[in-house]
Image 1 (cartoon, rainbow, N blue to C red):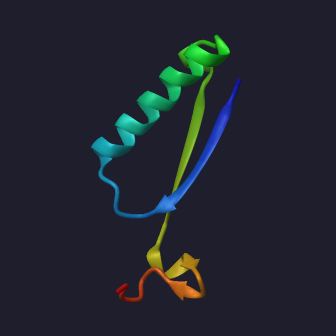
Image 2: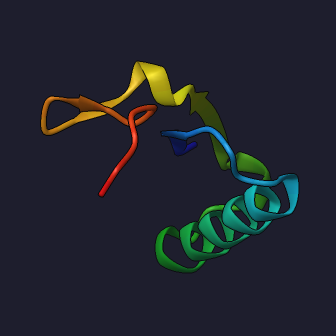
Length: 63
């Protein structure tokens, strides 16, 4: 039973998340031969003030 943990910046719509989990499940079934019912996906939305790249928080303006 594969379990995927996805961490991403908050702000994606419910429709985007539905499409993402549908496609990850589809590819997993195709590649691993598992059933869709055995694929678990956990999405964690991270607030922009809790994520940093290059020493800058994503809540700070970007140029």
